[in-house]
Amino acid sequence: MRVLMFGWEFPPHIAGGLGTACYGMVRGLANNGVDVLFVMPSASGDEDGRVARIINASDVEAADITCSPLDFLERINFLRIGTNMIPYVDPEDFTEMVEKDRHSQAQEFRINFKQKYRFSGKYGTNLMEEVARYALVGGTIAMQNQFDVIHAHDWLTYPAGVAAKRLTGKPLVIHVHATEYDRSGENVNTQVYALEKMGMEAADRVITVSNLTRNIVINRYGISPDKVFTVHNAVDFSGRSELDVHRGVPEKVVTFLGRITFQKGPEYFIEAANKVLKYYKNVRFVMAGSGDLLNRSIRRVAKLGISDRFHFTGFLRGADVQRMFAMSDVYVMPSVSEPFGISPLEAMRTGVPTIISKQSGVAEVLRHSIKVDFWDIDAMADAIYGILRYPALGVMASRCGLDEVNTLKWNNAAKKIKEIYLSTID
Image (cartoon, one colour):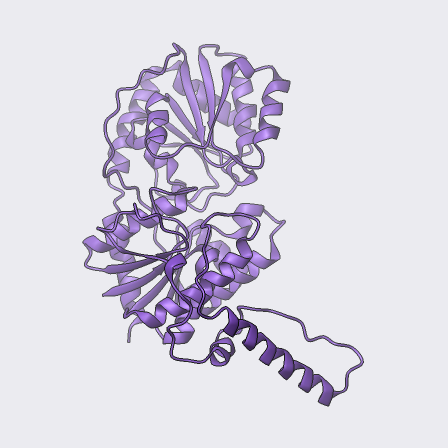
C-alpha cells in the first residue's frame, strides 16, 4: 500500500508537536508495510528519507497535468473564493460579467501555471496564500504519482488533500491534530474554521488524536460520527540518548515546555508557581517556549516578584528539549484545550513526574500522571508541592510513568491507521 501524505513540517525542522507526530507515524507505517510519499512545503534535504520519500513542494512546477487550466479551476473551485454579489445588474449582464471574470481568472492562472513557488514552510503573515498555492501544487503532485490513499494533516494541508482527491478520485483521510476551538477558544478564525470544515466534509475518514477532539469534530463541525475515528498519538524514542546533565543550580526544577499561547495555559502555571514559592523555597520554575503571551508572562512574573526563581529559555528543539527534561524534577502541562499532548510522554520517558490538565487528550491514556483542571491553580500548586516535598511520591510517579509510556508505540497506532486506510478502499 502506498499513501500520498500532505504535511507542513517534518523533523529536524519543526515548530511544534505536529512534525514530531508525523515523523513517528511515518516510521510506524513503514514498519506496517505502508510506503509514504510525504509532501512538505519546503524541504531542506536533511529530512530522514529512510522512512518516507520526501517531496519538496517548492521544487514542483504546477505544469505537468493532463487537464487545461480552465478545467483545473472548474474542478478545484475552492482555490479562489470571490463574490459575484453585484447590485443593479440585470440577469444577462450578470452572466456575461461572471463568464468574463472566469476567463480572466483562467488567464491569470495560465501565466503562473508553469512556475515554481518558493514556500517558506513557516506560519507567517502570508500563510493563507501559501495554503492555497500548496493546494495547487498538491494537485499536480497527485497526478504525477501512483498511490492508494491520500492523508492530510491539519487544516494547512486539507485543501491540498481535497484537490488531490478531486483530481484522482482516490479516498481522502484527514488527520485532526487540533481544531480552531483548541487554538482560539470561542474566538475562532472563520477562515480557518471554514477550511477545517471543508476538509472534514470532503474526507472519507477523519482521524482524531483523542476522544476529546472527536467530540469537537462531531458537535462543533457537524461531522457524522460514523466516519470519525480516534487513534491516540504515541511517542518515538529512537535516537534518544541517555544524558548526564549538570544543571548548575542546587534547587529543584519545575518545567513548562510548549508554545506560550492561550491554548497551553502558561498563565495558570505562573500563578501556581507563585503559590508554591510561598511555602517551598528550594525550587526554580522554567518556562521553555515562545509565543504571543511571552511578554505578558514575563511582566506577570516580574509583578509577582518571583523573577529570581523563574526562568524563560525561549524556543527549544531536539537535544535541547531532552536536556531540559533531564534537568527537571517535575513537568507541568496546564493546557486549556489540548487535543493530545506529546510532551508529557517525552517527560515521562526521561523519568520526570508529570502533572497534566484534565482538558487534554493524553489524559485519556495516562494513569500514572497527576490530573488537575487547568483553571484550578490551587490543585496544581498542591500537586507540584507534593512531588517536591515528598520524594517517595516523585519516585513512584517516575517509575510507573516510565513503564506506562513505554507501552505507547507508534507501530500500534500506525496499525490502526492502516486499518482505516483499508476501510476506504473498495
